[in-house]
Image (cartoon, rainbow, N blue to C red; front, side, top):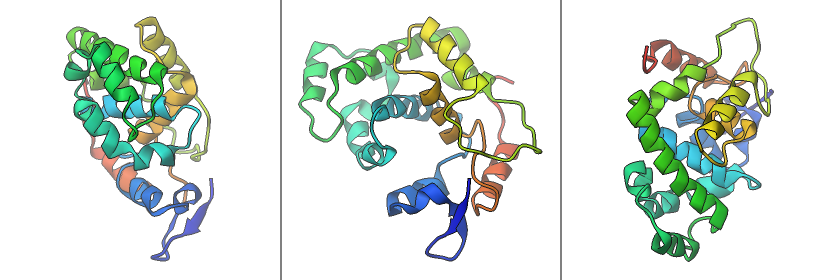
Amino acid sequence: MTTLPGPDGEHRCFWCHATPDYLRYHDEEWGFPVADDRRLFEKLCLEGFQSGLSWRTILVKRDNFRAAFDGFDFTKVARYGEADVARLLADAGIVRHRGKIEATINNARRAEEMVAAQGSLAAWFWRFEPARDPSVAPEVMAKSAESIAMSKALLKLGWKFVGPTTMYAFMQAMGMVNDHSDGCRTRAEVERARAAFARPGR
């Protein structure tokens, strides 16, 4: 990956310069480790909604998604029925795709099962964190061995819209890998956060 100077003159990953929304997301969220189950569930769902679309499309609608899906509280979303599907299909503030909406409801039910079996979503997801190799430079990949394994495991448990490419984007965003470019002003911040982060379930 390469970097470009931002409005403040500091270099950042090239992709975040497209819009102010991307810049904020890059500086404040992308790559910082997350252990909160609701945030993990939200991101996984939003990555599913992004399939075939740009992340900016989802990012600008994120508050609308949160309002529509009860803040991505999966214990509430798991109770959704056909009336909720109809409500969501009529909501112009989100991506109105029946398959993705129904997958979100299905995944909320699977999330409840995972918490019952594992104690938390975080404890399960963080098992797939790759071993750290400081000699390997960050790079943009579509998937990894770990994201393929995570995808296969989730599909076996009945989750939907969790392909290996979606799972790698999820791992990048939730801090399981630090894919900020060398020279990016946020890379060192993320690395410090990851060093101080208590891995769930360990």
